[in-house]
Image (cartoon, rainbow, N blue to C red; front, side, top):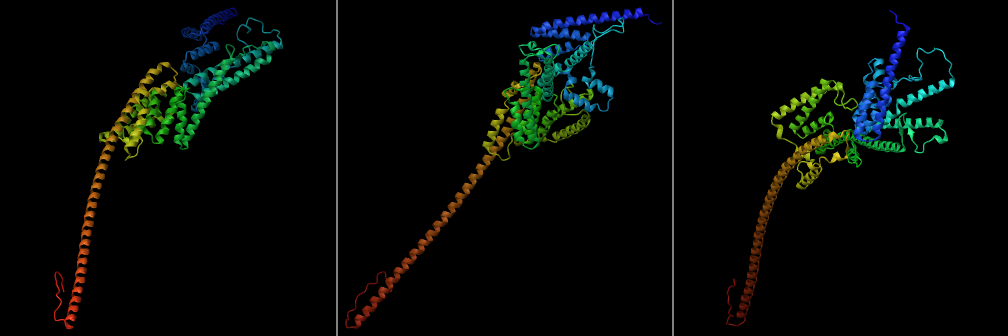
Length: 555
């Protein structure tokens, strides 16, 4: 049975009345929310969010309610909720979605990956100005009125489309550590705000400019010069962090690990600090640079900080497990591999990577089965090594960053530096330079950082004790070798002295014998001369011979 015109007209009037009733309710919610937001008190702003949720329940795509809710969440530092609400506008997420959805249908890709295309341009308002079916189909109208309506619709669509989304989402991304996305969003929002101000200022009279210099970024809230300065300062800070990060990564790829460590240290030790997600990423990169340069303890410490800030970081767990395996600390390596295996199993069970959709992940979902298989094989291998008795063969020299056969002074210097850097009392010092996206995470981060730092500190102290015992034993053995060599040298010296004394005595005896022989020879010649003289005298007439005494003389 066909419906009568009166019946259809009654349904239209009833539907129109229901729509107008909801619009009045939504307007009332918005008005009350604005009054609560104007007080700038946290409990009032939380109540305003409840009112805006009620308004969005009636009209889920009401732009004013969405903008006010995003502003309230940003004021309350609930950045994750802002990113969840506006994640379709995050550039990196949109690019990754475009790459993964190449095989999907065009309709689904238009609905899920192109949020800007979903908003259709409304040239004419659909409110009370729209003609109803009861009105006459023909009426006279002026071209100027139509032009005004068209331009108003376009301007409304531009304001509705982007400006506040870019700025609010850019601030949220900057606090979440998505620095590249934050820079792109803030630059786009700033450019669109300037363009909107130029378009509106063309139509203004000279006396219509406000004295405060407000720039309207949307139809609801103006942007003051102070907000513009804050955005400029935030952009400059983001660009500085990104420049240092880029330089550090480039230095690491070029093999200049000391230069890379220096750039990353400038980021993590800055007085202004950095967001939690960005700091975790920098600590992870610096741990890789430390590992490549052979500084195992520093690399483990940076992995501990990364896992304290982000417990589900797959790369940090993998790097720390390989570091422990490098120094033959097999139980700790097994612990990290088991944790990594649980993460992979949870990913396969939930069929998604850990964390929200906008969180950056360094592993693809398609690579999880292969990595899980390799981790299972590695766990089995390490268990066999532990069962064979390799549990106590820790390479303490590699942990302390020393060469084998190092001196006692080198060991004490290395121990002093590592103790000062990784003392448990200083394990939470990096938290003071970290901007957390959720203040409720601070206590859990402190607990994780303190526990991991305590384990590393004990490992360093154990390594120092063992190496000091080895060094003392080597010093004692060296001292014994020196004493033995000194004794041998002294014995050789005594033997040489005895030999020299004997040779001196022999030379003295020989010289004495030669002297006696020479003296006897002279005495014999004189005696013969006297005998010859006596004979001559006796022959000359002297009958009395000359008496000669031969005492002690040999003739």
